[in-house]
Length: 318
Image (cartoon, rainbow, N blue to C red):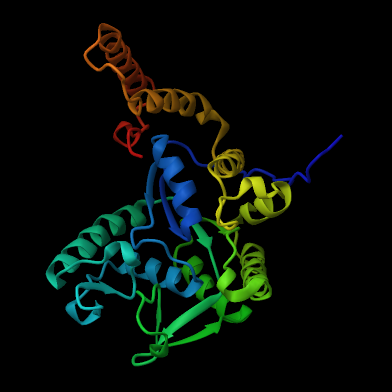
Protein backbone atom coordinates (compact mmCIF):
# COMPACT_ATOMS: atom_id res chain seq x y z
CA UNK A 1 0.00 0.00 0.00
CA UNK A 2 1.32 3.40 -0.99
CA UNK A 3 0.62 6.21 1.46
CA UNK A 4 2.19 9.04 -0.53
CA UNK A 5 2.60 10.17 -4.13
CA UNK A 6 6.28 9.59 -4.83
CA UNK A 7 7.93 11.89 -7.36
CA UNK A 8 9.85 10.05 -10.06
CA UNK A 9 13.22 11.74 -10.57
CA UNK A 10 15.67 10.63 -13.24
CA UNK A 11 19.27 11.36 -12.15
CA UNK A 12 21.38 13.55 -14.41
CA UNK A 13 23.87 11.82 -16.68
CA UNK A 14 26.76 14.04 -15.63
CA UNK A 15 26.80 14.62 -11.88
CA UNK A 16 28.68 16.48 -9.17
CA UNK A 17 31.85 15.08 -7.62
CA UNK A 18 34.03 16.35 -4.78
CA UNK A 19 36.33 19.09 -6.02
CA UNK A 20 33.74 20.55 -8.38
CA UNK A 21 32.97 24.22 -7.70
CA UNK A 22 29.33 25.00 -6.91
CA UNK A 23 27.45 28.27 -6.54
CA UNK A 24 24.05 28.27 -4.84
CA UNK A 25 21.97 31.35 -5.48
CA UNK A 26 18.42 32.38 -4.75
CA UNK A 27 15.76 31.81 -2.12
CA UNK A 28 16.32 30.53 1.41
CA UNK A 29 15.88 27.06 -0.07
CA UNK A 30 19.24 27.59 -1.78
CA UNK A 31 20.64 28.30 1.68
CA UNK A 32 19.29 25.00 3.01
CA UNK A 33 20.58 22.77 0.23
CA UNK A 34 23.80 24.72 -0.30
CA UNK A 35 24.76 24.66 3.36
CA UNK A 36 24.01 20.92 3.49
CA UNK A 37 26.54 20.46 0.68
CA UNK A 38 29.09 22.69 2.43
CA UNK A 39 28.59 20.71 5.63
CA UNK A 40 29.70 17.57 3.81
CA UNK A 41 32.86 19.21 2.52
CA UNK A 42 31.79 20.11 -1.00
CA UNK A 43 33.32 23.19 -2.61
CA UNK A 44 30.21 25.36 -2.42
CA UNK A 45 29.57 29.10 -2.21
CA UNK A 46 26.10 29.95 -0.90
CA UNK A 47 24.22 33.20 -1.56
CA UNK A 48 27.08 35.74 -1.52
CA UNK A 49 24.48 38.56 -1.80
CA UNK A 50 22.20 37.03 0.80
CA UNK A 51 18.84 35.48 -0.02
CA UNK A 52 17.43 36.52 -3.41
CA UNK A 53 13.93 35.74 -4.61
CA UNK A 54 13.10 36.94 -8.11
CA UNK A 55 14.69 35.94 -11.45
CA UNK A 56 15.84 39.46 -12.37
CA UNK A 57 17.76 39.98 -9.13
CA UNK A 58 19.32 36.53 -9.45
CA UNK A 59 20.34 37.23 -13.06
CA UNK A 60 21.79 40.61 -12.03
CA UNK A 61 23.79 38.91 -9.27
CA UNK A 62 25.25 36.45 -11.77
CA UNK A 63 26.20 39.24 -14.17
CA UNK A 64 27.91 41.03 -11.26
CA UNK A 65 29.83 37.90 -10.31
CA UNK A 66 31.02 37.53 -13.88
CA UNK A 67 32.14 41.16 -14.23
CA UNK A 68 33.49 41.45 -10.70
CA UNK A 69 32.75 45.20 -10.79
CA UNK A 70 33.08 46.51 -7.21
CA UNK A 71 30.13 48.22 -5.59
CA UNK A 72 30.51 52.00 -5.46
CA UNK A 73 29.34 54.60 -2.96
CA UNK A 74 26.65 55.67 -5.49
CA UNK A 75 24.99 52.28 -5.02
CA UNK A 76 24.77 52.60 -1.25
CA UNK A 77 21.37 53.42 0.23
CA UNK A 78 20.56 54.55 3.75
CA UNK A 79 18.27 52.27 5.73
CA UNK A 80 16.47 54.28 8.39
CA UNK A 81 18.84 56.49 10.35
CA UNK A 82 21.41 53.93 11.45
CA UNK A 83 22.31 51.54 8.64
CA UNK A 84 23.50 51.33 5.03
CA UNK A 85 23.09 48.66 2.38
CA UNK A 86 22.56 48.24 -1.37
CA UNK A 87 19.56 47.12 -3.39
CA UNK A 88 21.61 44.12 -4.55
CA UNK A 89 21.90 42.60 -1.06
CA UNK A 90 19.54 41.41 1.63
CA UNK A 91 19.21 42.69 5.18
CA UNK A 92 22.05 40.53 6.52
CA UNK A 93 24.46 43.04 5.00
CA UNK A 94 23.20 46.09 6.90
CA UNK A 95 26.16 48.08 8.20
CA UNK A 96 26.34 51.20 10.42
CA UNK A 97 28.82 52.93 8.06
CA UNK A 98 29.17 53.31 4.29
CA UNK A 99 32.84 52.40 4.46
CA UNK A 100 32.15 49.27 6.47
CA UNK A 101 29.41 48.22 4.08
CA UNK A 102 31.52 48.69 0.96
CA UNK A 103 34.45 46.82 2.49
CA UNK A 104 32.19 43.93 3.40
CA UNK A 105 30.23 43.61 0.16
CA UNK A 106 33.29 44.05 -2.05
CA UNK A 107 35.32 41.51 -0.10
CA UNK A 108 32.47 39.03 -0.47
CA UNK A 109 32.09 39.91 -4.15
CA UNK A 110 35.78 39.39 -4.87
CA UNK A 111 35.79 35.94 -3.28
CA UNK A 112 32.49 34.88 -4.80
CA UNK A 113 33.40 36.17 -8.26
CA UNK A 114 36.58 34.11 -8.29
CA UNK A 115 34.66 31.01 -7.18
CA UNK A 116 31.89 31.56 -9.73
CA UNK A 117 34.30 31.84 -12.64
CA UNK A 118 35.85 28.49 -11.66
CA UNK A 119 32.58 26.78 -10.76
CA UNK A 120 31.24 23.92 -12.83
CA UNK A 121 27.77 24.04 -11.26
CA UNK A 122 25.27 26.83 -10.59
CA UNK A 123 22.21 25.89 -8.55
CA UNK A 124 19.44 28.48 -8.68
CA UNK A 125 16.37 28.44 -6.43
CA UNK A 126 13.65 30.72 -7.77
CA UNK A 127 11.28 32.04 -5.11
CA UNK A 128 8.78 34.35 -6.80
CA UNK A 129 8.01 36.10 -10.07
CA UNK A 130 6.87 39.19 -8.16
CA UNK A 131 9.39 42.04 -8.18
CA UNK A 132 9.75 45.46 -6.58
CA UNK A 133 11.01 48.39 -8.62
CA UNK A 134 12.49 51.44 -6.86
CA UNK A 135 10.58 54.28 -8.52
CA UNK A 136 13.19 57.10 -8.33
CA UNK A 137 15.64 55.04 -10.42
CA UNK A 138 13.34 52.32 -11.89
CA UNK A 139 15.75 49.73 -10.52
CA UNK A 140 14.50 46.23 -9.74
CA UNK A 141 15.63 45.53 -6.18
CA UNK A 142 16.64 42.34 -4.44
CA UNK A 143 15.26 43.63 -1.15
CA UNK A 144 13.23 46.68 -0.12
CA UNK A 145 15.06 46.96 3.23
CA UNK A 146 11.84 47.94 5.04
CA UNK A 147 11.70 51.26 3.22
CA UNK A 148 8.27 52.91 2.64
CA UNK A 149 6.12 51.01 0.14
CA UNK A 150 5.27 54.24 -1.70
CA UNK A 151 8.85 54.26 -3.05
CA UNK A 152 8.32 51.01 -4.94
CA UNK A 153 6.23 49.72 -7.79
CA UNK A 154 5.29 46.05 -7.51
CA UNK A 155 4.50 43.82 -10.48
CA UNK A 156 4.65 40.19 -11.54
CA UNK A 157 7.08 39.23 -14.29
CA UNK A 158 5.55 37.81 -17.42
CA UNK A 159 6.64 34.43 -18.72
CA UNK A 160 8.66 35.99 -21.61
CA UNK A 161 10.40 38.39 -19.19
CA UNK A 162 11.36 35.53 -16.89
CA UNK A 163 12.67 33.37 -19.73
CA UNK A 164 14.60 36.27 -21.25
CA UNK A 165 16.41 37.18 -18.02
CA UNK A 166 17.55 33.61 -17.34
CA UNK A 167 18.29 32.77 -20.99
CA UNK A 168 20.87 35.54 -21.03
CA UNK A 169 22.67 33.86 -18.12
CA UNK A 170 22.66 30.42 -19.74
CA UNK A 171 23.92 31.78 -23.05
CA UNK A 172 26.72 33.68 -21.32
CA UNK A 173 27.98 30.55 -19.54
CA UNK A 174 27.71 27.49 -21.81
CA UNK A 175 30.64 25.94 -19.91
CA UNK A 176 28.62 25.64 -16.69
CA UNK A 177 25.79 23.29 -15.73
CA UNK A 178 22.73 25.00 -14.24
CA UNK A 179 20.30 23.26 -11.90
CA UNK A 180 17.05 25.15 -11.36
CA UNK A 181 14.58 24.63 -8.56
CA UNK A 182 11.40 26.46 -7.71
CA UNK A 183 11.22 27.05 -3.99
CA UNK A 184 8.31 25.23 -2.35
CA UNK A 185 7.93 28.07 0.18
CA UNK A 186 4.64 29.87 -0.37
CA UNK A 187 4.63 33.66 -0.45
CA UNK A 188 1.39 34.20 1.45
CA UNK A 189 1.58 37.99 1.15
CA UNK A 190 0.63 37.51 -2.49
CA UNK A 191 -2.41 35.48 -1.45
CA UNK A 192 -2.65 31.78 -2.27
CA UNK A 193 -3.88 32.47 -5.81
CA UNK A 194 -1.20 35.09 -6.43
CA UNK A 195 1.42 32.71 -5.11
CA UNK A 196 0.24 29.98 -7.47
CA UNK A 197 0.35 32.33 -10.46
CA UNK A 198 3.90 33.32 -9.52
CA UNK A 199 5.05 29.72 -9.10
CA UNK A 200 3.36 28.75 -12.37
CA UNK A 201 5.31 31.45 -14.20
CA UNK A 202 8.57 30.16 -12.72
CA UNK A 203 7.78 26.52 -13.48
CA UNK A 204 6.84 27.28 -17.09
CA UNK A 205 9.96 29.40 -17.55
CA UNK A 206 12.28 26.70 -16.21
CA UNK A 207 10.57 24.09 -18.39
CA UNK A 208 11.22 26.24 -21.46
CA UNK A 209 14.84 26.82 -20.44
CA UNK A 210 15.47 23.10 -19.96
CA UNK A 211 13.99 22.44 -23.41
CA UNK A 212 16.12 25.14 -25.03
CA UNK A 213 19.49 24.63 -23.33
CA UNK A 214 21.41 21.41 -22.80
CA UNK A 215 23.14 22.83 -19.71
CA UNK A 216 19.85 23.57 -17.91
CA UNK A 217 18.31 20.99 -15.57
CA UNK A 218 15.32 20.95 -13.23
CA UNK A 219 15.18 19.47 -9.74
CA UNK A 220 11.55 19.16 -8.49
CA UNK A 221 11.90 20.44 -4.91
CA UNK A 222 8.55 22.19 -5.32
CA UNK A 223 6.73 18.97 -6.20
CA UNK A 224 8.48 16.90 -3.52
CA UNK A 225 7.31 19.11 -0.67
CA UNK A 226 3.84 19.93 -1.99
CA UNK A 227 2.93 16.48 -3.37
CA UNK A 228 5.19 13.79 -1.93
CA UNK A 229 5.34 15.36 1.56
CA UNK A 230 1.73 16.50 1.45
CA UNK A 231 1.20 16.93 5.18
CA UNK A 232 1.47 19.85 7.59
CA UNK A 233 3.75 17.84 9.89
CA UNK A 234 6.50 18.61 7.37
CA UNK A 235 6.05 22.37 7.91
CA UNK A 236 7.21 24.58 10.74
CA UNK A 237 4.75 26.49 12.91
CA UNK A 238 4.41 29.26 10.33
CA UNK A 239 2.92 26.68 7.92
CA UNK A 240 5.26 27.98 5.21
CA UNK A 241 8.82 26.82 5.86
CA UNK A 242 9.70 23.10 5.73
CA UNK A 243 10.88 21.34 8.86
CA UNK A 244 14.43 20.06 9.24
CA UNK A 245 13.11 16.56 8.50
CA UNK A 246 11.59 17.74 5.21
CA UNK A 247 14.75 19.61 4.21
CA UNK A 248 16.88 16.53 4.92
CA UNK A 249 14.50 14.38 2.87
CA UNK A 250 14.66 16.75 -0.10
CA UNK A 251 18.44 17.00 0.24
CA UNK A 252 18.68 13.20 -0.01
CA UNK A 253 16.65 13.39 -3.21
CA UNK A 254 18.93 16.14 -4.52
CA UNK A 255 21.98 13.97 -3.84
CA UNK A 256 20.45 11.09 -5.79
CA UNK A 257 19.64 13.46 -8.65
CA UNK A 258 22.81 15.56 -8.83
CA UNK A 259 25.74 13.87 -7.04
CA UNK A 260 27.76 11.05 -8.56
CA UNK A 261 27.15 7.76 -6.68
CA UNK A 262 30.92 7.26 -6.51
CA UNK A 263 31.00 10.02 -3.88
CA UNK A 264 28.82 8.13 -1.39
CA UNK A 265 31.72 6.65 0.65
CA UNK A 266 33.36 10.08 0.96
CA UNK A 267 30.04 11.67 1.96
CA UNK A 268 29.49 9.01 4.63
CA UNK A 269 32.98 9.54 6.05
CA UNK A 270 32.53 13.32 5.94
CA UNK A 271 29.20 13.09 7.76
CA UNK A 272 30.69 10.91 10.49
CA UNK A 273 33.54 13.36 11.04
CA UNK A 274 31.15 16.33 10.94
CA UNK A 275 29.04 14.80 13.70
CA UNK A 276 32.16 14.34 15.80
CA UNK A 277 33.33 17.90 15.15
CA UNK A 278 29.97 19.33 16.20
CA UNK A 279 29.78 17.19 19.33
CA UNK A 280 29.62 19.24 22.54
CA UNK A 281 31.17 17.38 25.51
CA UNK A 282 29.47 17.28 28.89
CA UNK A 283 32.80 16.74 30.64
CA UNK A 284 35.55 18.23 28.43
CA UNK A 285 38.27 17.47 31.00
CA UNK A 286 37.47 13.77 31.24
CA UNK A 287 39.64 10.93 30.00
CA UNK A 288 36.77 9.69 27.86
CA UNK A 289 36.66 12.98 25.99
CA UNK A 290 40.43 12.98 25.46
CA UNK A 291 40.07 9.56 23.86
CA UNK A 292 37.22 10.91 21.75
CA UNK A 293 39.42 13.80 20.57
CA UNK A 294 42.19 11.36 19.66
CA UNK A 295 39.76 9.23 17.64
CA UNK A 296 38.37 12.34 15.96
CA UNK A 297 41.85 13.44 14.88
CA UNK A 298 42.54 9.97 13.48
CA UNK A 299 39.36 10.14 11.44
CA UNK A 300 40.28 13.60 10.20
CA UNK A 301 43.70 12.42 9.02
CA UNK A 302 42.24 9.30 7.42
CA UNK A 303 39.57 11.32 5.59
CA UNK A 304 42.14 13.83 4.37
CA UNK A 305 44.39 11.08 3.07
CA UNK A 306 41.68 8.99 1.41
CA UNK A 307 39.50 11.81 0.08
CA UNK A 308 41.70 14.90 -0.42
CA UNK A 309 38.97 16.79 -2.33
CA UNK A 310 36.74 16.97 0.74
CA UNK A 311 37.03 20.43 2.31
CA UNK A 312 37.69 19.60 5.96
CA UNK A 313 37.39 23.21 7.15
CA UNK A 314 33.74 23.27 6.09
CA UNK A 315 32.74 20.22 8.10
CA UNK A 316 32.55 22.03 11.41
CA UNK A 317 30.52 24.96 10.07
CA UNK A 318 26.93 25.18 11.31
